[in-house]
Image (tube, rainbow, N blue to C red):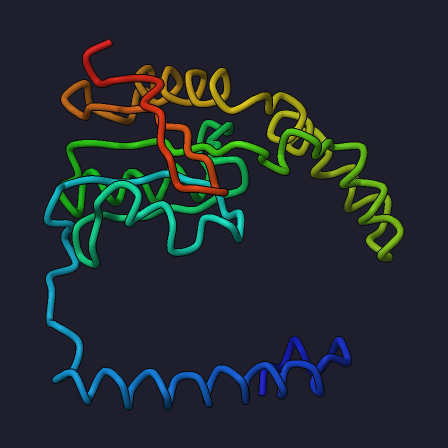
Length: 199
């Protein structure tokens, strides 16, 4: 059992969730074995593509098929709002690994309609953290990062244009990497190419 979960008094809830995962995995493995097992594929994406998209639950099993992508064809990086704002953060680090270690030559930034980040603010996050018992000192330590990350998020089309331009100008991403901007409707999966690599 997870020591952190035990310390926070969440052992019961985590045990139920762990049991659920294990039961689902048994079913998954049974189906996979019945189909001859999972195909063995390389960790390098066949299409040399990285997709930077949002973590919204409505995008699960939608983004990849809407773009015509199958398992093994692309690296998918999910982060709230599909945003990289710091000089270096884990999303940018993942993208650098994709480019320099996995041979990615194209990046598609995929935002979506009705993104919750449009309504998320640093003030709102700080208030909710304080209400949950996070200390004021700890909140103030990350507040500038929250403001830079959450407050500027706008509607999907300008947001994806901004992110594409940031990546194109990023000094750590070579000019040879093509960056695309796409908006998707999570209700029906329809995409709109906002920024082509040639623009």
